[in-house]
Image (tube, rainbow, N blue to C red; front, side, top):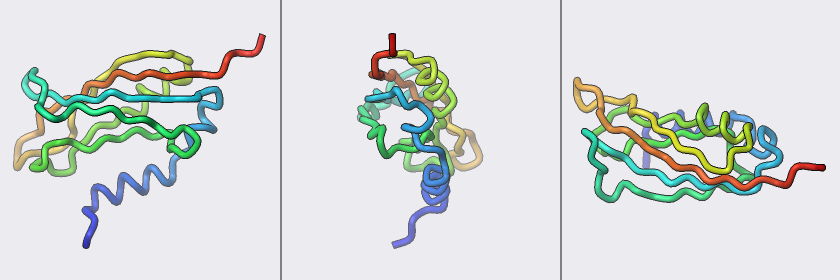
Length: 124
């Protein structure tokens, strides 16, 4: 079975990325609530919760587009997530537009996320 090249490339980027535990050593837990929308409407069955295993996770947050017709699409939440985690924000929201194509037309899906983080207590 052949793995699509876009998936292989994403896995390679994750493998080569710094580890989340090294980039945010005070981070204990991270949960992302994800949902996709198209034309302002939530896509049915697109909502999911992702629990990040901080000890093993890459400091890279890429999510593939949920539309099976989308070519090379996906969302890169890395900047938003890492910025907020480094600021030790316990809850934050964001969104990203898909960068893929449906035939000759850009994909119009948008991924919204709500993040919940837990951190070690700061030393006095």
